[in-house]
Length: 576
Image 1 (cartoon, rainbow, N blue to C red):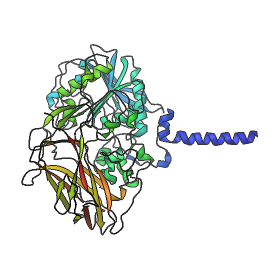
Image 2: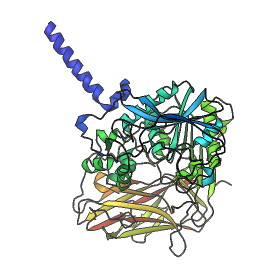
Image 3: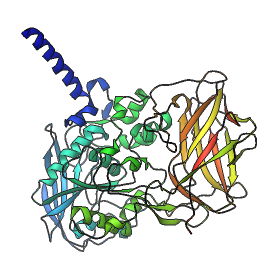
């Protein structure tokens, strides 16, 4: 009897070990992993060699000074800079960090962390598009500018995260390991003698993305987050494998430039080795319901904002800024003052009326016209949204509000061709939120197809209208893409306006088979004047000359009563 009991006990212990070993259950059991399970076979490569060794010191940067980096904002206060302070993570890994504090009030400070592997050395030059007058130089790349924040009574903390430069370990790419490191670091910062126990995360792009992963682990002293330029909460679906096929070139460029003494995780290589959804990619997906702290979320169009929809906090605000890029937006004085009110409210407890701020403020772009900034809404997407279907007529190349009664099809060369469909708006029309495309398709001469789609405004001569938004990138409208064999949807999380494919297995097409694809299209905010036309383009390449390798033969688009292909647009009633 005793042996049987011990045997059963051993089985229970083994099962428990497996339970704890699963990275998704680790979050629930409170265990914070320090490395990926070996069975995931995560691919790492050698990081670039760092160039500047740690040099612990404390210096004072004087008010009125300007660094020799091209930054022109005169420092408005003295700053105490503690360089290369060491911090130890839960597994013994040591990080180096810089701490910048206002010299006139060096204690009882809320802290703002810029978490990234891009290096912490300051001063820096203004990022592309940032007016030098808006930047003091005392910010790590894409991070909070200490010249602004220290002057308003905040400390700015810039770590070299795991594996970066001379910090120990291997560089991680978001997911639970990096998030757990952020958890440890936040709790360490909160215990520093100069800190009031209130800690926030802020920054753009990488520094924005990581905030969601970290906040989902609920560090006790993380009080608020402010991710800017957020373009993914799901690395597979929103980044390296968008649509189910490799779009990892930008990821490779970023990864190959990271510096450290050891290894760097290579998501682009993992995308090539593991092209279907698996445990590794699930680890790169944020459960946004777990984020319950005040959140200020800013992201331009073409970037992911669907995470905001399921974000668990009741104190959350969304801003879709003027299409100027995340760096100019982040250091814009008006936006910094806006974010200051948010942080003052939740990190300092100042009753400044922040809660009256509209939940969503969006810029509506008018290619060829004048953009409208900061339109207020009570939710994102706007609760006023009316989802309207515009049905494709394959033969006529048109879109109409009425279902098409005659069957027809349109075809194009899978490698080089495209099909276009247009409609003219009778009234002024706001398209704000998430479009989607239901497309009935057939592959002739192949068993799969990659579909690229784009929604744009065109003039009466068929020319595509663009807006630069005051930045170097042009914007003509939102896009989407999907591999036909990966069309199966995750019914648990898909909605009528936001389809979410599972990407778990390929379902290849047989000869003559006609299938429906629900293609998610990036969120947008655009305005069409009465009489202006919308054009939908469906193509076998990225509409930028980069043809998908699997696209062969002919793509056929079907329309009609049996195959009701349609473009669904989020129409918001015009505000009078």
